[in-house]
Image 1 (spheres, helix red, strand yellow):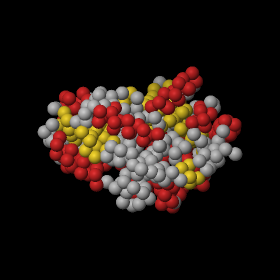
Image 2 (cartoon, rainbow, N blue to C red):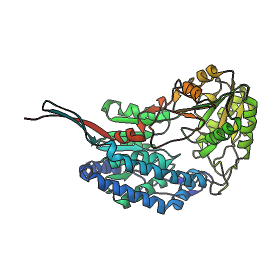
Image 3 (cartoon, rainbow, N blue to C red):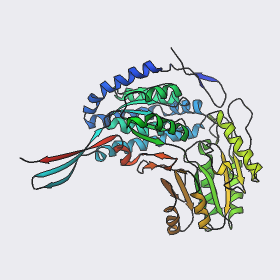
Image 4 (cartoon, rainbow, N blue to C red):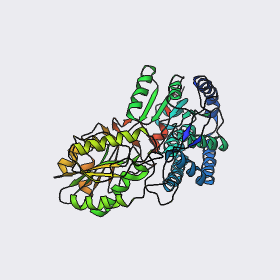
Length: 457
């Protein structure tokens, strides 16, 4: 039996070696899911909702242990791991509360003996290739609504969050999801490749732009529903009238939370010249005060870098910025091992010739650029191939709305950042992906609308 070695990114130690899938086992599980899906779709929605209620109870009962596992395998500070699991609960509540309404039958016309109706039917067998940075959020954004709407799911958690994925699957099975309706496929890229070779009705991927493109190319000839939640280079603008200290506190958290390993982490900050120096002073002081260290310590604010190769990416961005004249205020180096560590890093005097203002960092590195006015800030915010989130800090709501309406981003923020709500769709422009999760639209994404033309005899 093949195994997948799992190492703690904070220490380098081997923590587990679960059995891994191969092409043969992936094919067998896909066939089993295909056979089991019709019976699951026939289960009354009320019963499927009850299953998810029991799943929620299971998460709450094991929350501390699940958070500990998450911290061990991906380096997330333990307080933030608990935050992720606690934050999952209102998402589950939303899906449970809104599913029936989102997929209800709709009578849209009744006149002259002709009736028209829309119903929602499951896609069928759904593949979910998920992410490691928020494995509970990202996994449940797909798995939960897919199951509630009657689909079978072939779920491949990231190899960097496999243990969390196995726990997620175990708890769903314990809650009443049949074993063949939800399969967890353990492995790295070759397992994902084998999954894409199966007969599928939908592919939902969260991860890097490069991998998303490869998945799109692999599925192009098969006309299968495809959703890609990819990266970001998320900007924020601090206007002259902003509360500078409050903006600095918010944006420092938005840049450094989860060690900067979020698609919606703040990665570019533009500050009006009149408040630039004060903002940088506050921002740097906040970042310098963050504790970097043992992710299991309650006081840790910045944990380990999950993937060792990302250290090279971060160092290359730092070296490029320095070579092009940026001012380094703190950080700028990898930290000695064991494990994967990078200092929280803040640059000012940056511009768009530099890698850290153009390419996704996915780590605790941020650039702050001075701008003359709103027009320059808006132009720079839109000077990117990504379009996930963007924020404006100002006391003037009308001005914030005016600017945010012109930003190419799926989610926009006024005086906040790095925030996701189950009630709002999560989507992106450009290289940030196609399709959406969350909201009632994110429930309907796992169904096909079926049009009924009914003429009375």
